[in-house]
Image (tube, rainbow, N blue to C red; front, side):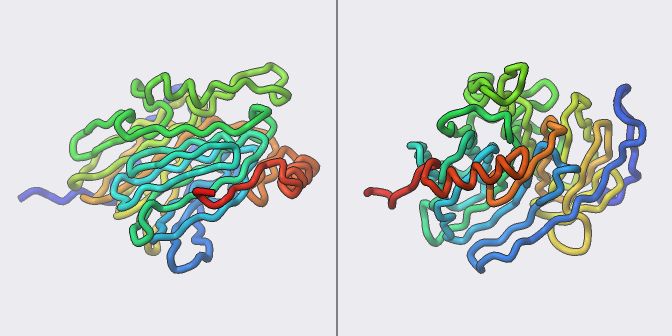
Length: 320
Protein backbone atom coordinates (compact mmCIF):
# COMPACT_ATOMS: atom_id res chain seq x y z
CA UNK A 1 0.00 0.00 0.00
CA UNK A 2 1.44 3.39 -1.01
CA UNK A 3 2.18 5.72 1.84
CA UNK A 4 0.49 9.15 1.63
CA UNK A 5 2.62 12.17 0.85
CA UNK A 6 3.69 13.84 4.12
CA UNK A 7 2.38 17.37 4.42
CA UNK A 8 4.82 18.30 7.16
CA UNK A 9 8.26 17.48 5.76
CA UNK A 10 11.34 18.59 7.61
CA UNK A 11 12.53 22.05 6.53
CA UNK A 12 15.50 20.71 4.56
CA UNK A 13 17.41 23.50 2.89
CA UNK A 14 20.62 23.79 0.90
CA UNK A 15 21.53 27.42 0.32
CA UNK A 16 23.10 28.75 -2.83
CA UNK A 17 26.72 29.72 -2.25
CA UNK A 18 26.12 33.49 -2.15
CA UNK A 19 22.78 33.49 -0.34
CA UNK A 20 22.43 35.03 3.10
CA UNK A 21 22.90 32.12 5.51
CA UNK A 22 20.60 33.83 8.02
CA UNK A 23 17.70 34.08 5.57
CA UNK A 24 14.77 31.86 6.48
CA UNK A 25 11.19 31.72 5.21
CA UNK A 26 8.80 34.12 6.92
CA UNK A 27 5.03 33.93 7.12
CA UNK A 28 3.35 36.96 5.55
CA UNK A 29 -0.02 38.12 6.91
CA UNK A 30 -2.86 37.74 4.42
CA UNK A 31 -5.77 40.19 4.38
CA UNK A 32 -9.30 39.65 3.16
CA UNK A 33 -10.63 43.12 2.37
CA UNK A 34 -14.32 43.71 2.91
CA UNK A 35 -16.06 43.41 -0.43
CA UNK A 36 -19.53 42.77 -1.76
CA UNK A 37 -20.88 39.22 -1.97
CA UNK A 38 -20.06 39.06 -5.67
CA UNK A 39 -16.35 39.72 -5.13
CA UNK A 40 -14.11 37.79 -2.75
CA UNK A 41 -10.41 37.28 -2.36
CA UNK A 42 -7.31 37.40 -0.22
CA UNK A 43 -3.87 38.84 -0.65
CA UNK A 44 -0.69 40.37 0.67
CA UNK A 45 -1.03 44.15 1.05
CA UNK A 46 1.00 47.02 2.54
CA UNK A 47 4.11 44.95 3.37
CA UNK A 48 6.54 46.46 0.90
CA UNK A 49 9.53 46.03 3.22
CA UNK A 50 9.02 42.28 2.86
CA UNK A 51 7.56 42.14 -0.65
CA UNK A 52 9.45 44.84 -2.62
CA UNK A 53 8.98 45.30 -5.61
CA UNK A 54 5.41 44.03 -5.13
CA UNK A 55 3.01 46.56 -3.65
CA UNK A 56 0.30 43.91 -3.45
CA UNK A 57 -0.53 40.40 -4.65
CA UNK A 58 -4.25 39.70 -4.60
CA UNK A 59 -6.13 36.48 -5.39
CA UNK A 60 -9.65 37.31 -6.55
CA UNK A 61 -12.93 35.57 -7.29
CA UNK A 62 -15.64 37.60 -9.02
CA UNK A 63 -19.12 36.25 -9.65
CA UNK A 64 -20.36 38.37 -12.53
CA UNK A 65 -18.92 41.51 -10.95
CA UNK A 66 -17.38 44.31 -12.99
CA UNK A 67 -14.50 46.42 -11.74
CA UNK A 68 -15.63 49.97 -12.59
CA UNK A 69 -13.29 52.65 -13.98
CA UNK A 70 -10.52 53.54 -11.54
CA UNK A 71 -7.04 55.08 -11.86
CA UNK A 72 -3.52 53.68 -11.55
CA UNK A 73 -0.16 55.44 -11.91
CA UNK A 74 3.50 54.73 -11.21
CA UNK A 75 3.08 50.95 -11.25
CA UNK A 76 2.59 47.89 -13.40
CA UNK A 77 -0.69 45.96 -13.04
CA UNK A 78 -0.43 42.28 -14.01
CA UNK A 79 -3.70 40.32 -14.00
CA UNK A 80 -3.63 36.56 -14.59
CA UNK A 81 -6.93 34.77 -15.18
CA UNK A 82 -6.79 31.19 -13.93
CA UNK A 83 -7.44 28.53 -16.61
CA UNK A 84 -10.47 27.21 -14.69
CA UNK A 85 -12.28 30.58 -14.82
CA UNK A 86 -15.63 30.28 -16.56
CA UNK A 87 -15.57 33.66 -18.28
CA UNK A 88 -13.21 35.94 -20.15
CA UNK A 89 -12.74 39.62 -19.21
CA UNK A 90 -12.71 42.71 -21.35
CA UNK A 91 -10.01 45.09 -20.09
CA UNK A 92 -10.00 48.71 -21.26
CA UNK A 93 -8.01 51.79 -20.36
CA UNK A 94 -8.58 55.46 -21.14
CA UNK A 95 -5.74 55.72 -23.66
CA UNK A 96 -7.18 53.26 -26.15
CA UNK A 97 -6.24 49.88 -24.73
CA UNK A 98 -9.02 47.33 -25.25
CA UNK A 99 -8.30 43.61 -24.94
CA UNK A 100 -10.19 40.43 -24.13
CA UNK A 101 -8.36 38.28 -21.59
CA UNK A 102 -9.37 34.64 -21.82
CA UNK A 103 -8.92 32.00 -19.09
CA UNK A 104 -5.22 31.22 -18.86
CA UNK A 105 -4.12 34.63 -20.25
CA UNK A 106 -2.14 37.40 -18.56
CA UNK A 107 -2.90 41.10 -18.96
CA UNK A 108 0.15 43.35 -18.49
CA UNK A 109 -0.53 47.06 -18.02
CA UNK A 110 2.34 49.51 -17.60
CA UNK A 111 0.40 52.49 -16.24
CA UNK A 112 3.36 54.92 -16.55
CA UNK A 113 2.13 58.48 -15.83
CA UNK A 114 -1.38 57.27 -15.18
CA UNK A 115 -4.55 55.99 -16.76
CA UNK A 116 -8.09 54.93 -15.90
CA UNK A 117 -9.06 51.34 -16.59
CA UNK A 118 -11.87 48.86 -16.00
CA UNK A 119 -12.53 45.12 -16.19
CA UNK A 120 -15.81 43.72 -17.52
CA UNK A 121 -16.77 40.00 -17.45
CA UNK A 122 -17.81 38.56 -20.77
CA UNK A 123 -20.64 36.59 -19.10
CA UNK A 124 -22.47 38.22 -16.21
CA UNK A 125 -23.39 34.95 -14.48
CA UNK A 126 -19.95 33.34 -14.69
CA UNK A 127 -17.00 33.36 -12.29
CA UNK A 128 -13.64 34.99 -12.95
CA UNK A 129 -10.78 33.70 -10.79
CA UNK A 130 -7.24 34.95 -10.88
CA UNK A 131 -4.42 36.89 -9.31
CA UNK A 132 -3.45 40.54 -9.62
CA UNK A 133 0.07 41.80 -8.92
CA UNK A 134 0.88 45.49 -8.48
CA UNK A 135 4.59 46.08 -9.17
CA UNK A 136 6.26 49.29 -8.01
CA UNK A 137 7.62 51.56 -10.78
CA UNK A 138 7.50 54.86 -8.85
CA UNK A 139 9.96 57.26 -10.44
CA UNK A 140 11.19 54.58 -12.87
CA UNK A 141 8.31 54.39 -15.31
CA UNK A 142 8.33 55.73 -18.85
CA UNK A 143 6.90 59.21 -19.38
CA UNK A 144 3.87 59.07 -21.61
CA UNK A 145 0.85 56.93 -22.35
CA UNK A 146 0.31 53.53 -20.75
CA UNK A 147 1.16 50.31 -22.57
CA UNK A 148 -1.12 47.26 -22.40
CA UNK A 149 -0.31 43.79 -23.74
CA UNK A 150 -1.76 40.30 -23.34
CA UNK A 151 0.30 37.13 -22.96
CA UNK A 152 -1.81 34.28 -24.31
CA UNK A 153 -1.91 30.93 -22.54
CA UNK A 154 -0.42 29.11 -25.52
CA UNK A 155 2.69 31.36 -25.38
CA UNK A 156 3.48 30.30 -21.80
CA UNK A 157 5.80 27.36 -21.08
CA UNK A 158 3.94 24.38 -19.58
CA UNK A 159 5.70 21.28 -18.23
CA UNK A 160 5.47 18.44 -15.72
CA UNK A 161 7.75 17.44 -12.87
CA UNK A 162 6.38 14.20 -11.51
CA UNK A 163 2.82 14.81 -10.36
CA UNK A 164 3.32 18.58 -10.47
CA UNK A 165 2.09 20.60 -13.48
CA UNK A 166 3.88 23.95 -13.86
CA UNK A 167 3.02 27.04 -15.90
CA UNK A 168 5.41 29.95 -16.32
CA UNK A 169 2.99 32.87 -16.67
CA UNK A 170 5.65 35.57 -17.07
CA UNK A 171 9.35 36.17 -16.53
CA UNK A 172 12.00 33.47 -16.14
CA UNK A 173 12.33 30.29 -14.07
CA UNK A 174 15.76 28.67 -14.38
CA UNK A 175 16.27 27.85 -18.08
CA UNK A 176 12.64 28.52 -19.05
CA UNK A 177 11.29 31.95 -19.92
CA UNK A 178 8.28 33.58 -21.54
CA UNK A 179 9.08 34.02 -25.27
CA UNK A 180 11.54 36.87 -25.79
CA UNK A 181 9.25 38.84 -28.09
CA UNK A 182 6.67 39.05 -25.29
CA UNK A 183 9.26 40.20 -22.77
CA UNK A 184 10.53 42.83 -25.18
CA UNK A 185 7.02 44.29 -25.44
CA UNK A 186 7.05 44.64 -21.65
CA UNK A 187 10.56 46.10 -21.54
CA UNK A 188 10.37 48.35 -24.58
CA UNK A 189 10.08 51.70 -22.78
CA UNK A 190 13.22 53.56 -21.81
CA UNK A 191 13.16 55.43 -18.53
CA UNK A 192 13.20 59.17 -18.98
CA UNK A 193 13.77 61.17 -15.82
CA UNK A 194 13.61 58.09 -13.60
CA UNK A 195 17.01 56.45 -13.26
CA UNK A 196 20.08 58.65 -13.65
CA UNK A 197 21.71 55.83 -15.61
CA UNK A 198 18.85 55.69 -18.10
CA UNK A 199 18.34 51.96 -17.57
CA UNK A 200 15.58 50.12 -19.37
CA UNK A 201 12.30 49.23 -17.77
CA UNK A 202 13.01 45.49 -17.55
CA UNK A 203 10.21 44.77 -15.08
CA UNK A 204 8.65 42.38 -17.62
CA UNK A 205 11.80 40.28 -17.74
CA UNK A 206 12.56 40.33 -14.02
CA UNK A 207 9.02 39.80 -12.75
CA UNK A 208 8.13 36.11 -12.61
CA UNK A 209 4.86 34.33 -11.88
CA UNK A 210 4.97 30.54 -11.65
CA UNK A 211 1.83 28.43 -11.16
CA UNK A 212 2.14 24.99 -9.55
CA UNK A 213 -0.76 22.52 -9.76
CA UNK A 214 -0.69 19.12 -8.05
CA UNK A 215 -2.28 16.37 -10.15
CA UNK A 216 -1.62 13.82 -7.39
CA UNK A 217 -0.10 13.87 -3.90
CA UNK A 218 3.58 14.65 -4.36
CA UNK A 219 6.75 15.51 -2.45
CA UNK A 220 9.81 17.08 -4.09
CA UNK A 221 12.54 19.69 -3.79
CA UNK A 222 11.88 23.24 -4.97
CA UNK A 223 15.03 25.05 -6.10
CA UNK A 224 14.49 28.82 -5.82
CA UNK A 225 16.95 30.84 -7.96
CA UNK A 226 19.53 33.01 -6.20
CA UNK A 227 19.73 35.85 -8.74
CA UNK A 228 18.78 38.96 -6.79
CA UNK A 229 15.03 38.48 -7.01
CA UNK A 230 12.73 38.31 -3.99
CA UNK A 231 10.22 35.44 -3.89
CA UNK A 232 6.73 35.13 -2.41
CA UNK A 233 4.70 31.90 -2.23
CA UNK A 234 0.92 32.29 -2.09
CA UNK A 235 -1.67 29.53 -1.72
CA UNK A 236 -4.66 29.57 -4.07
CA UNK A 237 -6.43 26.37 -3.06
CA UNK A 238 -5.83 23.15 -1.16
CA UNK A 239 -3.11 22.19 1.31
CA UNK A 240 0.67 22.15 0.99
CA UNK A 241 3.82 22.30 3.06
CA UNK A 242 6.79 24.41 2.03
CA UNK A 243 10.09 24.77 3.90
CA UNK A 244 8.55 23.31 7.05
CA UNK A 245 5.49 25.62 7.00
CA UNK A 246 1.97 24.24 6.62
CA UNK A 247 0.09 26.27 4.01
CA UNK A 248 -3.66 26.32 3.46
CA UNK A 249 -5.80 28.46 1.20
CA UNK A 250 -8.40 28.83 3.94
CA UNK A 251 -8.33 28.09 7.64
CA UNK A 252 -5.88 28.60 10.45
CA UNK A 253 -2.63 27.82 8.63
CA UNK A 254 -0.38 30.30 6.85
CA UNK A 255 -1.31 31.27 3.29
CA UNK A 256 1.77 33.23 2.17
CA UNK A 257 5.54 32.99 2.69
CA UNK A 258 8.51 35.20 1.91
CA UNK A 259 10.84 32.55 0.49
CA UNK A 260 14.63 33.07 0.30
CA UNK A 261 16.73 31.45 -2.44
CA UNK A 262 17.88 27.88 -1.94
CA UNK A 263 16.45 24.35 -2.03
CA UNK A 264 13.29 23.69 -0.04
CA UNK A 265 11.10 20.66 0.46
CA UNK A 266 7.64 21.06 -1.06
CA UNK A 267 4.66 18.74 -0.60
CA UNK A 268 1.08 19.03 -1.73
CA UNK A 269 -2.20 17.18 -2.05
CA UNK A 270 -3.95 16.49 -5.33
CA UNK A 271 -5.88 19.54 -6.51
CA UNK A 272 -3.68 22.05 -4.66
CA UNK A 273 -2.56 25.22 -6.45
CA UNK A 274 0.36 27.40 -5.33
CA UNK A 275 1.74 30.58 -6.91
CA UNK A 276 5.35 31.71 -6.73
CA UNK A 277 6.01 35.38 -7.56
CA UNK A 278 9.50 36.80 -7.95
CA UNK A 279 10.78 40.30 -8.59
CA UNK A 280 13.92 42.36 -8.18
CA UNK A 281 13.65 44.68 -5.15
CA UNK A 282 14.09 48.39 -5.84
CA UNK A 283 15.16 49.25 -2.30
CA UNK A 284 13.70 52.75 -2.66
CA UNK A 285 11.10 54.75 -0.73
CA UNK A 286 7.57 54.45 -2.07
CA UNK A 287 4.20 55.89 -1.08
CA UNK A 288 1.31 53.78 -2.38
CA UNK A 289 -2.16 55.15 -1.83
CA UNK A 290 -5.29 55.40 -3.91
CA UNK A 291 -3.74 53.11 -6.58
CA UNK A 292 -0.92 55.63 -7.11
CA UNK A 293 2.73 54.69 -6.50
CA UNK A 294 4.97 57.70 -5.83
CA UNK A 295 8.43 58.33 -4.46
CA UNK A 296 7.17 60.72 -1.78
CA UNK A 297 4.12 62.64 -0.61
CA UNK A 298 4.69 65.56 -3.01
CA UNK A 299 4.77 63.17 -6.00
CA UNK A 300 1.59 61.56 -4.70
CA UNK A 301 -0.13 64.95 -4.51
CA UNK A 302 0.96 65.68 -8.09
CA UNK A 303 -0.47 62.37 -9.33
CA UNK A 304 -3.73 62.98 -7.49
CA UNK A 305 -4.06 66.41 -9.10
CA UNK A 306 -3.38 64.97 -12.56
CA UNK A 307 -6.20 62.49 -12.05
CA UNK A 308 -8.59 65.11 -10.66
CA UNK A 309 -7.85 67.40 -13.62
CA UNK A 310 -8.62 64.63 -16.11
CA UNK A 311 -5.04 64.20 -17.36
CA UNK A 312 -5.27 60.42 -16.87
CA UNK A 313 -8.24 60.25 -19.21
CA UNK A 314 -11.80 59.02 -18.84
CA UNK A 315 -13.73 55.96 -19.97
CA UNK A 316 -17.13 56.05 -21.60
CA UNK A 317 -19.56 53.15 -21.71
CA UNK A 318 -18.63 50.54 -24.35
CA UNK A 319 -20.23 51.37 -27.68
CA UNK A 320 -20.45 55.13 -27.10
